[in-house]
Amino acid sequence: MASLDSHVLMKLVSLLLSSLFVTIVSSESQCQNFESIISFGDSIADTGNLLSLSDRYNLPMSAFPPYGETFFHHPTGRFSDGRLIIDFIAEFLGLPYVPPYFGSINGNFEKGVNFAVASATALESSFLEERGYHCPHNISLGIQLKSFKESLPNLCGLPSDCRDMIGNALILMGEIGANDYNFPFFELRPLDEVEELVPLVISTISSAITDLIGMGGRTFLVPGGFPLGCSVAFLTLYQTSNMDEYDPLTGCLKWLNKFGEYHSEQLKEELKRLRKLNPHVNIIYADYYNASLRLGQEPTKYGFINRHLAACCGVGGPYNFNFSRSCGSVGVESCNDPSKYVAWDGLHMTEAAHKSMADGLLNGPYAIPPFNWSCLSSKIKKKEVIRNTIFFDE
Image 1 (spheres, rainbow, N blue to C red):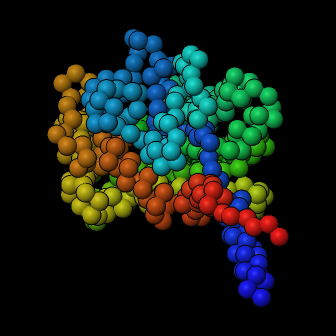
Image 2 (spheres, rainbow, N blue to C red):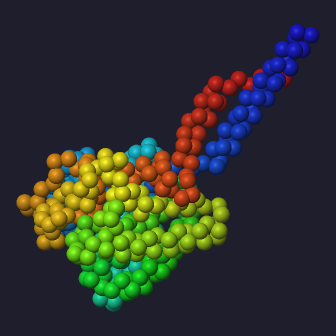
Image 3 (cartoon, helix red, strand yellow):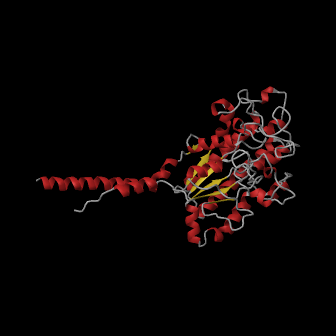
């Protein structure tokens, strides 16, 4: 009788552990253990492409100190004092920093590749130039995507291998589109004229995502726009004595922030449409607008000084910014502690601000729908259970 009870007990334990194993394997199937990051976009995600594309007589400001001073301790081509949002995402996923593709010779892109280029637009530069908007570099989202396709034989070899590589990657779609608006706004073009570009920009981003889905893409992180009214450059350019133009809480220009909201809302609606058409694909909206805006609403809560609208690296005026003497120029220095500042150079953010935004995406409410990043460890947990499980013979 005791022998029978023991046999029954062993069978029950075996059944219980087997069920646990199946549950964990099933749970893992709902997760994505990313093997690499594929990135497109502009200066918000550029880890050195513009620097690589530039000749030594026309280097970007990001090629000079104090860019890179905080973390890398030298300029890397990133438009910040240190790491960007994409760098913190890579760290979180346990992946190396995503290397720039352009200008690389025999680069190691096994764990990621970055096509984002500072000043890039979503729309083709020829289209924008026809409308009278000057684009300093001809690196649109379409050109980045074309370069990616052309690079695939070197990146992954056979088409089947490339499809697996793309399917197992986190695809970061930007931020892209801001420069399509920045260039006309810098030329003081009317608001309604710039608003006409929004549906075109959204359609271009959507087409790129659809193209990548056809190539095997399964998970996309798609950032919205920033609150342009909080940009130090625009606050300087559109400075006015009419205090009704400013948000009393943040000091940002209300009409420019409203435009940023318009772009973000249109993008969110388009992503909803894409999700319905592609239910097997994870399309995550990264709410850069509110993740950034909160830093201006409650700067001290996130470790920043109250004077959050002043650039750390710059000179002159109420916002420590001058278009003719930008960060990286001779005689323009940075603040003593960039970690206390949101704005880095008037157009870009500090490493500390990027980290706060990345935390809001990875651990907070600014990824829509919320992504279960914690399941990335499920593979490790599954291995531990298998190693510690005893399967009994009948």
